[in-house]
Length: 270
Figure 1 (cartoon, rainbow, N blue to C red):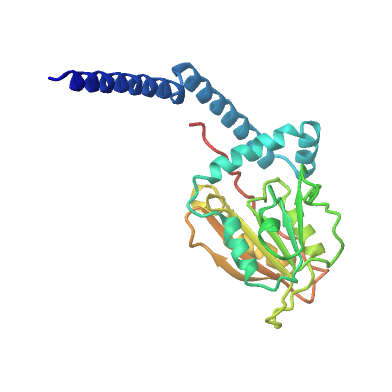
Figure 2 (figure 1 turned 45 degrees about the vertical axis):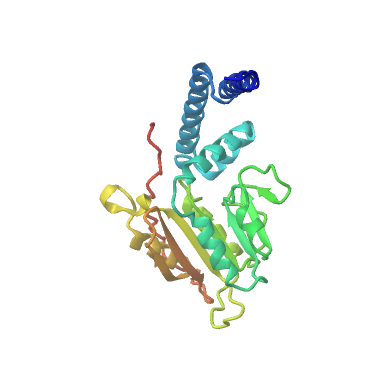
């Protein structure tokens, strides 16, 4: 081996050593330590525990109690929605996206009320005027209120939406509030129709075989309130979609409605 060849070999060896050392440093920087991984897992477990606790609270109290609960500790609302988003990320299809697609096929002049809007995705995704309603507002475009007592005027809304938000024990009062603010349906006008009530709910809440409500009894109760059932979509394995329109003529002498008990959607500890 010549002197120049030995020199090239030594330089290559030094370059390889530097590359190996730099790679080791980079790997050490990128790979979390066992202790940090453990802490992250513990934080995730604690966060999940808080979400389950808040979720159970919302399903087992009235809307007014839920409003007071979050007013006393607004940070719990953010914690709840962080957990909610994590749960929803496991769903192959989001019901809110189905509703958004439905709205995009309608006239943009329809006024929408999104009851229990969360991060107000509907308002951010359509051209329509949307009143985003929820228990807490960290956004000037979201109205904080009890879903059974909104500041909306009578007969001022074309479409009312409940997307996974019939959570209180007095859920029927939310639907009655939607009935109050909705305009009567005018479905004969293809271009502009109003009086729509869209409800998306977790499928297990409507499975009588596992303690859920009978979907027919739920539909009948809303029909007795003054709505016409247009469609029930059971095609998704995670949720059900109900489509109603408000009847033009309301029966104010109707008998007392028998509302079925909706099964709480409680998440198991993993």
